[in-house]
Length: 296
Image 1 (spheres, rainbow, N blue to C red):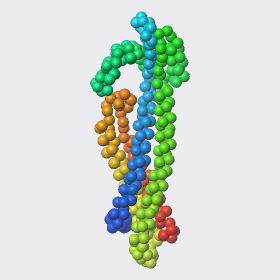
Image 2: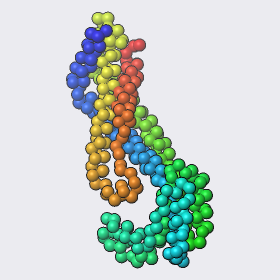
Image 3: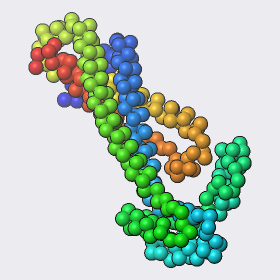
Image 4: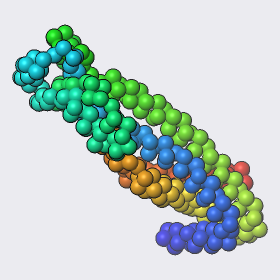
């Protein structure tokens, strides 16, 4: 059995080296298809991380109106700090809000720093226990909004819900794209294997005449198909890594700080799964391509 496997591997390697141009074209086509799928998975993965981060952000902003006095603000802050599952309450004046925006890279250009302090509403920033449910947070926001001196309350849960819908849409798009990629792999590898078989028709006929079994004849072609799928997927992962490194190097650090999540590459289980799926699809495509040309 070992000798047969070694022989099959050698014949597959010899065939791939003999027709390296055809193999390279197939790998390139597969890499392009897997790059599209990998890019979609990369976007969905980072959106999912952003959704998880915002869902656990545990913060709310209580915006104050202009009629609130300093005594009212201090009393409100102390009362909010004593609310169960509110871990901290920090007052941010209009001037402090402008200073925080002015310290950003955008503010260095002067657009925000030139605005008057009144353009930035004063607020009390609450840190919320992540274990607080949406219903509890909504109830707290409704009660706080009814208090004197409070203009509005922002819990950011609406943004999280919108992001969750965006993630679900991305997952659906990635699933649809995966079907397209799988079809492309079957078509490209199947066509490549059929063409390779036609070019090696004389070799196959000689093997059949000397009593070679169908499994013996098809073995090298199946290995070639698996190798094409695996190499194409691996090349796509490597290319995605390069593109990701370039984009991340140009990403504004202020943007990452604003959203609260650093962009990350595909988790290694995803990358390994792509390569494994490429190999399995390559073998399946080769088997389908050989079905009508080599009798089962």
